[in-house]
Image 1 (cartoon, rainbow, N blue to C red):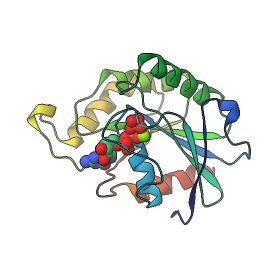
Image 2 (cartoon, rainbow, N blue to C red):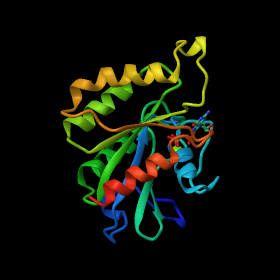
Image 3 (cartoon, rainbow, N blue to C red):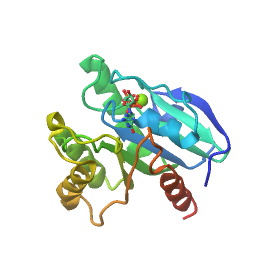
Length: 202
Ligand code: GTP
Ligand code: MG
């Protein structure tokens, strides 16, 4: 399930403008700054294929990356806080949700949640929206390398992860699959790639 080839294909802001070759794809979504672009780079073992930043709001389009000539990883703008005007963020929210609802080649959405901080309401709301719309989802917990800190609620990543799972239980008929990751240590990388391979070969 390893990545041997990865290339940026295009940026789109409308579902209709996304690639039309019919290859299956997986989208990375989550709060701004949660680590979507970093995770993509970790999966493809390249430092700067997707652009990352300390400042939330870096990714602003639907970005398609073709992997091994046969499937796509899709990097999306984050929701929630972003160093971008409210109006622009409203647009991101509209076109990403349109993409989730209408992109027929989308195999599964990977919802990224920061495991180094306490559960955030906006992530619960997003999970709820995906559940209500019956969009297939995998939960990816990011930043699991970070140690617990008092100012971040004083809980270990494992504790934040189980809190989150407890709180979303009612949103899904069956609990979504979940993987703990770090783009610093590459924890979870092989597990994600294997999971994506299994989903593609349905
Ligand atoms: P937007 O494009 O703004 O929505 O953000 P994003 O979700 O793509 O986040 P990005 O990958 O740009 O990472 C944001 C910040 O978090 C950067 O400073 C990364 O270095 C850091 N970061 C990402 N993943 C990890 C991780 O697993 N561990 C740690 N410690 N830091 C991480
Ligand atoms: Mg990004």
